[in-house]
Length: 193
Image (tube, rainbow, N blue to C red; front, side, top):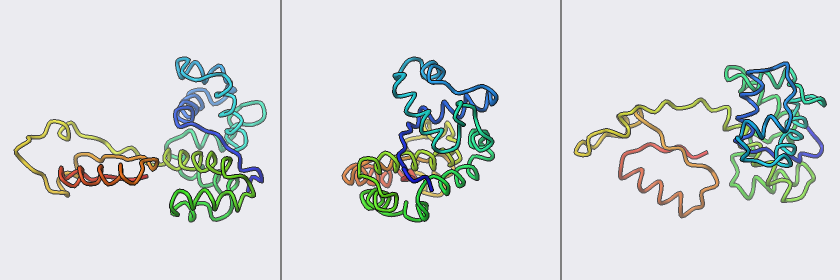
């Protein structure tokens, strides 16, 4: 376990880092490259915070070169196994199991088990969830999901072959209820993460 468990990683930058590492695994990942990959939509300071986290997670070495673990993380085929190693070495023991706790309880669990503050734990939980989300295979969405006939109501099993609506874990309880109700009315399977 990384004793600090103080991570700051955005999903956009994590995806950009995956792409950059896959494309050029022998080139250091510098903050300027991340800013460029994000078309200037992030600051150099934010990019540096993310690079520091990638180093703490063992994805980059001290010179910002991708490690073997980082190259495996950047590869969609080996990403899940690499992420398990990252979590096991960077987060408190039992983090994957504790991630099923309600959000506030999970943050409190990380704070307690990493011996850190709530605000640091919140950032680390966000980083953990981003890492786990990047492991999920993309669900192919068929065009028929958008263009199906409004007269025909599909059954759940028919719809599940067509599309999945993904709802971020940051949705509040009222939003989740609204989404679930709408999805039920339209027979659209939903996946909370």
